[in-house]
Image (cartoon, rainbow, N blue to C red):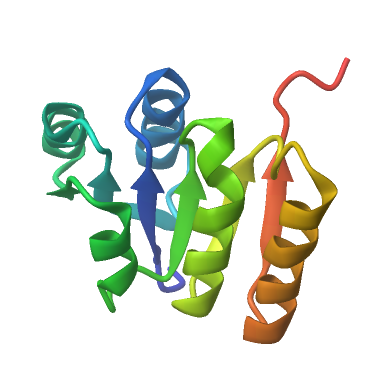
Length: 128
């Protein structure tokens, strides 16, 4: 089996829990190693369910050298800044839609991704 990708989850709300479950049960090539949420008890609950570390500050998760990629499931107003921070930390990124609500923030986030040379994918689970 190929090396498993260590994933950090940013956001332990409804969609974050969906992603945590998918990572744990449907992606054998991925391992959830950290969960961050500003509501510490939410991070601890999700992290505890999957044997991951819990953080109450997403930047602490981004500093963890074992985390290779992140899934951003936080509120829309935080997406662009977290994309920038994750890119600067050298993490590959999957982010729930939208990146941001204004073009300037989107441009800054995309510039950070390009400068860091990391991969970015934006998710939208209801295409049709």
